[in-house]
Image 1: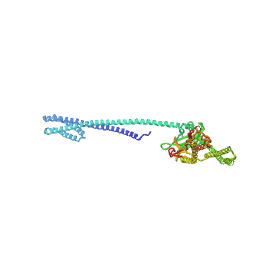
Image 2: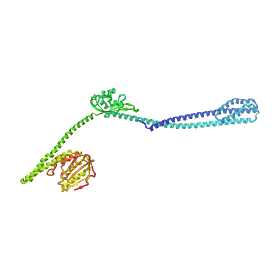
Image 3: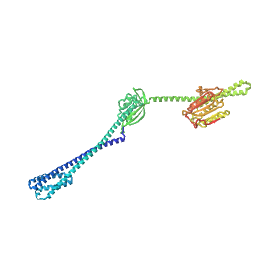
Image 4: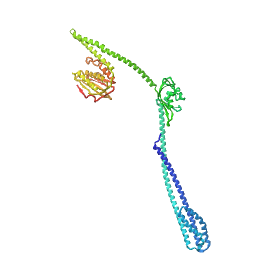
Length: 593
């Protein structure tokens, strides 16, 4: 897992802080040790000076005592202390000059002391003739000696104070350095602890990813095979084993096809090594969807696969191997073959249907011409009989002739309806945007013209947009509205409504009347040809109209159904396959009579 930049920066700063704290701690102790050593040397120097000065004081004391005794008595035996002083003071003088070489003031005092002490001692033999001035000189020497001693004592005290202060400062700095080092160590410890935790999480994440990858390879629906640059297989998942055999088989790349039973799509020719996607991937060449046929002891019937291969590239951009993915397309090819067979059958059926349509057109022509002629002849001769021989026919004969003529007209209407149904089936559907409200309005206006004496209340929107075939939709509305007009013929206040409703997001058009209605038990039969729910004598018709409407709605991809109750009217619902787009709320804003 890649660390973030602040975390690495923080670790680097902590390491630098630790190094600086340790260096600072060492420098403090080195500095303290050096200064302590120097102060110890200075204190020792002061102590030696004091010792030598004490010896000098002792010599001067002996000299003064001897000089006093000699001056009072004149005896030479009292001169022995002077001779000893001369002998010893020569050594003391050298030591004093050496010990005070770093202090010019002390050097000056030492010189005065030497001048005032050594010279008189050398001239002790003439002391008897000297006056009291010599005594003052000796006193001055004693005074210089006292000043030197006092100065050295002052130096010694100063060194001791500085040493004590340095010790305290060293201790303070040592404590501060120790606290800082403790903080640094604690920070490093926390950092290491966090590093260990993060590494543990990273290892856990890597392990989880490895487990996930292994699970994917184990459960993926495609075969996955990977090989190193030498052609040795490194990945071979279970699906690949089911396709190619039980695990990777050792051998050179030119033996892969033979070892695993890999053939060309013709299922006969053994695949060439240079055509295999793995072989090409090891050469750095990608491949996509190359088809092969695999047949081996694990797949005795053989399977068809498509293989995609890619070279494996390491971080340095060098090829490190190849990987291929095998997809079993056996079922897909079988389905494709089945689809091709169905297409061939459909083409044969289309040819037969074309032939049937031609035969139907021929039949329609025959019906339109060959059958109409006899009907026209029967109706015409019947009319001639009624007009030319009516006085020879009684009322019953005339009734028979009228029935014959009525049957001919009904037969002609039935032929017209059958031809209309056939034409509807042959009509090419042209779907486009249309104003079905305007179409319904024009149908209503035509009905008003043909039924001027009927006070029918029509409710229809002036505009209602839809998508469908305008010509077929007009034929459907003529039949549906015409039926509503017919079946409200015995209603005192007939009312017919055309509009639109939304049902579950679908545009549903309806034509509703308050006429005779029908029994819902027979609702599933009313759209079949020649099916009638009312007697011919009560409501005449051929029984073809609703069948025509049903075919029209179906050809436009829609549905039609009806709801009603005997004596309470009926409602016909229909949809158009491409849906409608109304311009108003529900199409009930316009009323006409």
